[in-house]
Every structure is written in C-alpha cells, then in structure tokens.
Length: 420
Image 1 (spheres, rainbow, N blue to C red):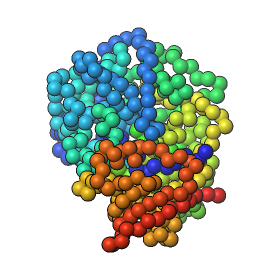
Image 2 (cartoon, rainbow, N blue to C red):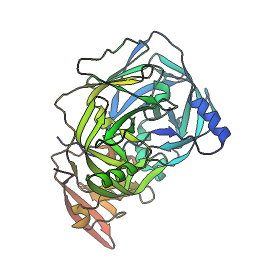
Image 3 (cartoon, rainbow, N blue to C red):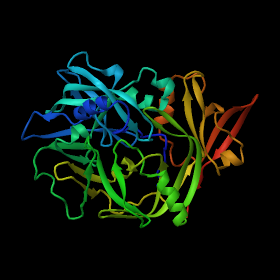
Image 4 (cartoon, one colour):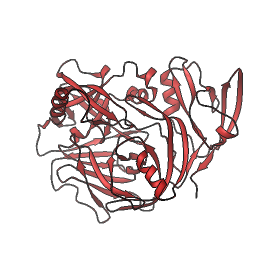
C-alpha cells in the first residue's frame, strides 16, 4: 500500500532561537525552558494513546485539575498550551520566548511557568511552557487550527527528558519510568545515539547520498517521513542527480502561518542513520537548519527515548516493511479561507495533469470536491475534509472550481510521482 503524503500536516514543533530579541528576555526564558523537576520516584506508568493522522495524542492534567486534557506528544517541541486553554491559577508569565516553527518561521510566544503537569501519576513541577495564540487561528492558520480544536497543546521534550519513554505502537501504550534498566533492547533493536538541544529535543546525525554528516531532529510532531534542508538539497543537486518534483503554493503550515512558494519532493539514493540504512528515500524540502525524521517513519518502530543515556532504541514492528517508492496524488492541495467560508486551491504539483492539462491555478475557489459542497462551510467542517483519509482505491476526484466567471466541473485522475 502506498502511503499518502500530506505536506501541510505535522509542523507543530517549536525550537528555541538563541539570537533573537532582547538579551535579557532570552536569558530569562532560556533558563525557564531548562527548568522543571520530577516530583515522584520509582515510578512506572502506562498511558494509552490515540492518533491524529500519524501523530500521538495522550492525556495529562494541569496543576490540580481533575479533568484531563489532550496533548500531541511532540519530541521536537517544548511544552506548549493554546491561549484559550490556560489554567486560571498555578501559572505565571515570565517573558517572551523567541522560537522558530518547524518550517523555519521565527517569532515570539509568551513564556510561562506551570506549577505542575501530571501524566497519570507522573508529575513534573515548575515547568516552562510557550503559549500559542489560537484566538484567530481558524482565520490566520486554519490547518493548525484543526489540530488545536482537538488538543490543548503539545507535550514536548522539556517534559519528557525527566524519564524514559517507551512508545509501543502495536498496543498503543506509552510506558514512562525512571528505571534505568527498563526496556532492554531486543535482538533486532537498533540503538541510535542522540544529542540534546537546550530544551531536550533529540538530534541524531546521518548522511544523505553518502555526503557530509547532517543533523536530523527526531520529531514526533512532524507527521511525514523525512524532510531535508533546502540548502542541502541544492548541494545534492550540484553534486549528483536526484529525482525531484516541484510543488508550488502553500505546502507547510507552522505556528506563525503557512509557507508560500516552492517545495521540492525528492528521491535520494540513500539516508544512513546510525544502524539504520535506507535506500531510495522520498523526502520533502524544508526551510530549516535541520532535517526532520517524522512520525510516519517512526510508527513502524516501537521506540524507547532515554534522555539520560542519550539514545533512542528502535525495534522494527514489521521487518518486511518498506518505505513508499512513489507519491500518489491528485496533483493539488486545498486550504480554507475564513473570510469566504470555503475551500480554495492552495498548492499544485507543477507537472501534474491538474495543472498542465486542466489548467487549475492557485487560489481558485473550490465549490465541491468528491461530491461534497465546499463553500459556506465552517472551519470545523473544513477540518473533517483535511483530517479524513482518502481510500487508496479512489483513482478519480470530481472537482468543481470557479475560474473567472465560469464554474468548471472536472474529473482529476490520481497520478504517481517519483516512480521508478
């Protein structure tokens, strides 16, 4: 089965930027983001989880609240809460935090300290967090608005680093413990060393097409497989031939908005991480200083994150699994406009039939898709479109778009890109 690629998903992660804004603010917030302490010892806690697409959702309680909240588990982020979900007590603002979203947009978020967060019986106290403004997100950033309609925030590495976390995708159970001897590797396990960023984000080194070592953020908040630095891909294009296809328009969404422009999807000959050797790997380009290893890849492994040993243990779930060798797509992506309460063409594969044969253009209003009306809908209805999966068996997509003064009724054929 060929997995779908959703470039617009999975850009939740927030990385600390050491070089923006007031030095005093940076020192204060930087120290806070390294704060926190585990208030329990000798613990072992099992937590069930669910998915939004490929991303992991767990429950946790803030301060002394009885009702649990939902969070995306995001190793590429620090603890984050949406503004509308801030607790009334047990939290204090200490400044602003300069951060970069995973699509490399830079901005400031309020930095706060939370009295405690409880994941089952595991409690971390005096922990720093970033506040994401979701007041106008459905209008300014409707993609992330869909995620933040379902969760209150992100549990990031600055919380996770105080314990060992086993993520078991077969049972959909996360086990959290402080036992140093827990989770011994199996005979087929691969132990990958990592280095920490200041807030605990795990970074591994690897090579692409046998070139120089490059850093990969291991990012459960990224819903894709691999994303490679745009500048690195430019170098690879000069040094060796790589297969590529171009996507134009809105191709990634971060906390500070959507990226517009050009994104490449490429097939590189090899990606080698310590103990993991992959051939003919499809990846997307990303405007970032780092490459990303996303959860669409990691869900095929049970994994153990150990911040004390600075290692991730990957145990394959299905030894016969292979990465997708092609991208199947109808050649266009869609997004939501709050002002028009409807969908529009947000991105296009430049070489697709949708663009070259049917003449579809960026920003055209979509009046119906797959037989469903897409105008005069709510943001929540848009989220249903965005988060649902299209069955692999569907090979044609009925589409109605308004082009000029004409309503065009089209039948878009699914295509294969980067196929050998």
